[in-house]
Image (cartoon, rainbow, N blue to C red):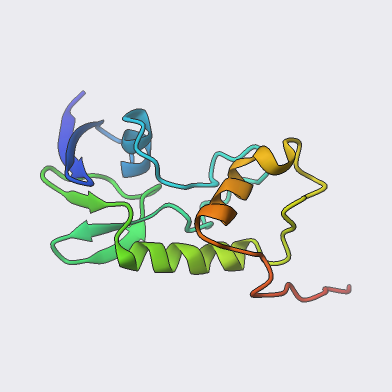
Length: 132
């Protein structure tokens, strides 16, 4: 199995062939928020919380489906990433309550931690009531 060396936040890491940037970063305990493995949410690969910026082009992309390339430079907290991640969290968590009755862990869950870290209230957007 071949290895790919790239950097995340100026730290050189190695990914296994076929692994995503998110998978490799998590193995190195590099924090990239993500919901694709959250036990309270279905896996649908479109939460867009795992955004990262790749250089030198400055593109912001999802790390869960990004395959690393040798020498690639990835940044997890650039201003562009922080701004887009916050907006995506606002959309994803529209009407989400800090004291979510569905959560098994109350205020001690990763969702509450992300809401606090990015100052997301869950009130910026409202989900439309859908009636069949």
